[in-house]
Length: 107
Image (cartoon, rainbow, N blue to C red):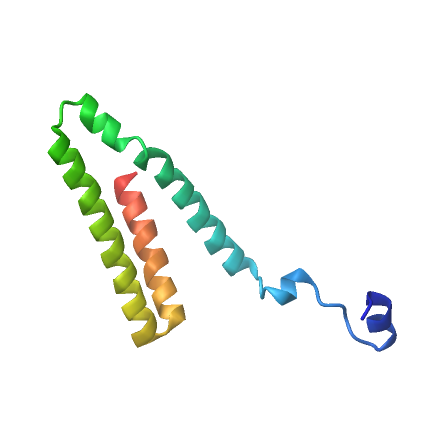
């Protein structure tokens, strides 16, 4: 159907805001998570090089990468468990709260 047909039938054309169920809170949380992830990925890529520059042996640098992957997997499993147990909204609130808290402590 075209937008003109919708107007004649008395219906509003479906907007992107309605289609994606966007409101101010969803947009704010999405932008916050995106900016935090962008900032985190900027420094994470160069951290092994910094460790090497500081004189860390290759085993320590490898252990750092392994620990990072392990913790990433544990966090995902924890949030998946919370999502199944308490619902998606509570899991999202926990994840955002954790990310903001850790971002403030580290930064």
